[in-house]
Length: 109
Image (cartoon, rainbow, N blue to C red; front, side):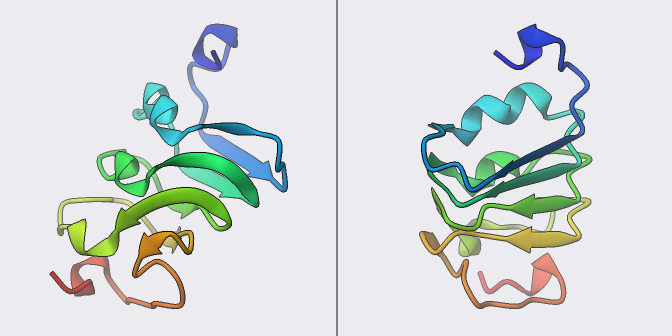
């Protein structure tokens, strides 16, 4: 819907504290080639696996705190998230809360 509404070059998406908002982050694949920042925080009805963003070539910031997103940090490989600088995941992601890594390649496999 966003792409058809005049947002084909969307670089930043920030959604905060909207407990009524629902959807799957998979729909953001429409913006794979343009998104640099995705910040979806306290949107408890947003679902999907965070790895959907693994091949976004320009993504520098990913924040999915307090969402229903899932996944496992052990699925991350050294070629995933090539530009990522900031990474915050939900409690539902294995290894996603209170873990700090200097580099994504430090994530245990």
